[in-house]
Length: 316
Length: 304
Image (cartoon, rainbow over all chains, first blue to last red; front, side, top):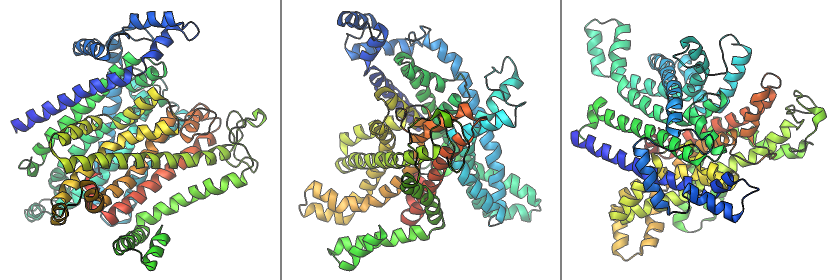
């Protein structure tokens, strides 16, 4: 167990390290553009370009620059934005909680929608409601986040006028207004995930309802509701928790999209803005932070898996 | 495809390929009999008909602006209404359909060919080469897919070619993993050993004995990847990394419609409907193909 943990940790760190190099390379493939942009398209004489390049350090070998950048990055210094001139690390620290909050509320909504519906479908297998729920989860799974997001903006601006605000309010300022500003985007990213949770809960729940310990509970005189919602549900949650972990990692794409649609000042929109402004130091830093969180979440899921499912422990 | 496979079957070419064609035809029929498969076909047919017949019956130019007609609702004159520049939305939607089908197809084709080549090489050669290739695969897999695509298209620019490249790169590691896993399974089987011992050259061995053995999981994964490929492509367009305006582009049309939602909801409805129908169709077809061809991949691909 400890060995497994150490190996996974080493792998995760190695992957993150390799990613820093890959992303740094992609972000510096177009260094000419940066110099050109800073020098101004009109005034980009060869002399000015050369001066710009040496000022930005672009005339030195990529590996040297990467080494320097990595050294600073490890200490939490990503340099300054080419566009705003502000400290990148400070900007990211301000944007990160916004994305994290939307993601966490999204996962919570997916669980609140997914588990009860999945349990209901499992208990009523083969009924009309089961089939309707299957249809609903297929639709939830297939509607892209940007379609449901746009739909929610429309609903929010017509039907839920008093409920919906189109600008972000931090939780510390006004919790209610904060909830109003992130509810719809969180719901948009929760829908596809809730579909996976419905189907996963349904299938694991059906399996556990057929296990011998369920009969034991019934014979002991436990009420049917207790058998279903305590005994069977508890035994079904292992794979569902793993799925929730995977969903958390997979939310990144949805986050980028809803932050754009709902004007949320998170990391995803930060990356999009920076790409549009060709602000590559920021792009590299933000991409790495996102990828880093993604790797950490996957690492936790990897570690949790054998803990939740004892059958996994003997393997590996 | 069923017809051509069956046709070759009756004419009876080389023995082995005939058997494989007959099996393929049989499987395609099974996909169409499968409830999900049938539902997928029912969903995709109207979109394909729209794409094929639309240009013949819609008289409007998809990029011609016409300010006098701006923001009109659906009518006999403009079936799907017009946008803020008075462009006909029906004409724009119809002209944008082919690309949302070709780009995911191209990306999956790129990923399945390159990915399997790398996976087979890793699984067949083993040793340090395998470790290096699989480590690179792990690194690619560690990036959230859409973020990778945004990064590639953001740096190198949009357009079909770069979008195919970006989406292909996201899917490449999945095919590498499947191809390597399947190759490892197949290469230990007696018939592969027999072929190797009888002096078959490596390339011929891979083409004749390994590829047929691993093609079915790769095919299943390809079909399953189509819907997410379409999703990523339209998401890229939605975020503004697709085609340069004024080219009609479903994702960008939807993004553009956000500013006019209360004034002209039809601007959003039709592109959104086509995108959703296509994804729903691809998902259903993918489910059917998976159930028919390879229940094993089902679990491996469950977490796309």
